[in-house]
Image (cartoon, rainbow, N blue to C red):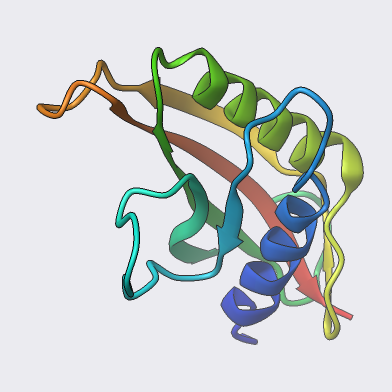
Length: 142
């Protein structure tokens, strides 16, 4: 079995980078990991490729070769008045992942299937909102 988590992370990151700067969205940055906060606002707007998991999926969809089912969590942090802009980020991410396709060197991917999403109320500071989405998709070595 080939480890396809690294190309899956790269593909998710690239697809999400594709929505940065899109019309109607707040300014945000996409990360492959939770960034170490430097000076400035530790709650700046961000989308983070979060936890990844892989499961053997050989033979599950009629492919005899090495096949993995990848589960991916995508995290969102938005700071502002109301969570509407974060929900717009979440909607754009879902569209980008499901409609844009995943591509990375060394692997082939099916389009991610959206599984679930959650969006918080404002945190204790009254202006920070967090969200999470879960996706699953199959990956195979290229």
